[in-house]
Length: 150
View (tube, rainbow, N blue to C red):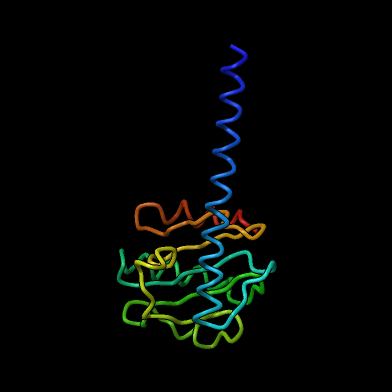
């Protein structure tokens, strides 16, 4: 029995470490993208990456999310990645953001799946903490959850 407990504790430690490692790798992947493509360094102050897309799911959901999330546009701890062209959502408010908004309609969705959908990527301690993908079935629940993340 004691041996079984030791094995279970060891397995738990390995799973926790590998999960943390995956979150750190995902963070490095995102950080490298912003550095290489936008010449921007994600530092400890950035705690949210807000991804605005269109045409990947529900157009009215993408529009509702875009309208709701504009409240974060002056938050120095949030950055925006807009891959929308303006066909379904109004991107004009994002064009006026100078320091924390980046545009990329050409990125490789296979290479950067983190940015393939409208989402909020929450960062913490140089790792990806949570990724909330906004979809039509759960948009209200997800927006309420995002209000709790500071």
